[in-house]
Amino acid sequence: MILKELSCTYSSNADGQARTIRYRNNTSTYNEISIAKFYTMGSKGAMTWLDKLEEQLNVDVDWMDPEYIKSMPIVPHDQTSNQLWVDIQLGDASNRDMFLETAKELKNEGWLAIYTRMAVLMCKKNINSIRGRVLLQTLPSNAFKTQETLDHARLYDREFARAGIGRDRYCIKIPSTGPALNAAKILSSEGIPTLGTALFSLPQAIACSQAGMLYISPYYNGKFAHEVRAHDEPDTLWPNVEDPATQHPMSARIVQIIETYKRLYKETGKEQPLVKNASFISAKEAMAAGEMGCHSATISHTVLDQLAKLEYDGTKQPGEGTPKPVHVYKNAGPCPERLKKLANVDPLAAAEWDGKLASTDIDYLANGGAELTKAIETDPISTTRLADALKLFIGGEERSKAKVEEVLKQI
Image 1 (spheres, rainbow, N blue to C red):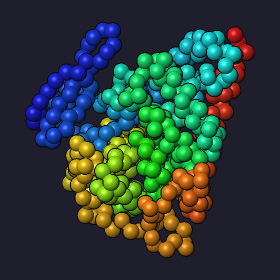
Image 2: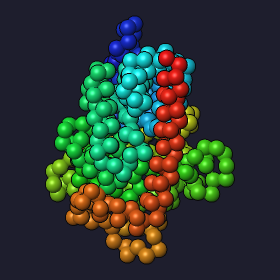
Image 3: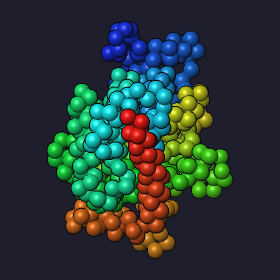
Image 4: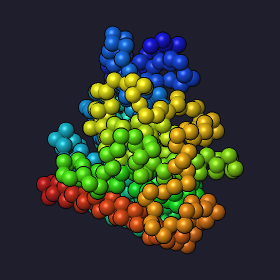
């Protein structure tokens, strides 16, 4: 590897020791890796799938464990989470004292105040181990309630400010429903950064653009399929294909979302949400996100480990992405030739689909999001997968509420 520039980047830990190397090779963008990884690269000269993917998009970690994040061979951009990951960390022994202290301080303010502060404080543990933002999600049980979603996001905003984390270092995940995205539109006007999550369709993506959101996270796989796979049960719901970029049924929708955002940026000059692809089951799927032109990919620790172990050989890849641009829409390249066929097809569409893509002229947020609700209801995949995702996250929310209530009994 020929390096054009090399510098040490210091973390803000008390020891003041350099933890990362920042370098530039044959692209105009910088990469950042751990010092241990840098020396490994120097001795072996081998590039991993993870290294290659980081050249093509921003790699994020979809996990909250501080020790895991510190051990990663690259420094992730963002740290994402959901109610499941927050619940796991709430039950971790390393957070026990902080949990008790927070519960004592907020015992008269209800379980949600304690939960929200704990979620922010647990993210704070990772803020110096990442380059970008920490992300937390509003309550999924309120996914169809505008005011409640707005209230919880504002509570997060206050807690992040209390923790010394500015709006440039966090983002609030909002379920991509009509009512919740109406809350997101208000939050955007207040300068609170948001991400549209539980997103499965182009109408949802257009609605997120209309809400002025910073990010969207299309789920490459449905959450139920992900859970089935994770528990080693029959994975009939998971399309385990050799070439996900062209063969996975969700790829067409991802490509259409990206191309729509490119067009909207060109036509209006307005910033569009950055596509942070999520819910990967295999390393191959994560690599497909790079080829499709996603801005970033938030990846579970299990898939990150797979990517870090695989040596990259471009001659054995079905396709390959390009180095990430400085501005994902202003400097956007064309859709890869072999993916252009996906622009007008939809393997996930209902049988009666007329072949027309969702129109950007429709106001999906008007009347409480009525048009978006209708679009979701007429798309069986979006209906099913949204319900599955919310059910899964509500389960995590309820377990966390029980943990908070149990701690309150002990003080």
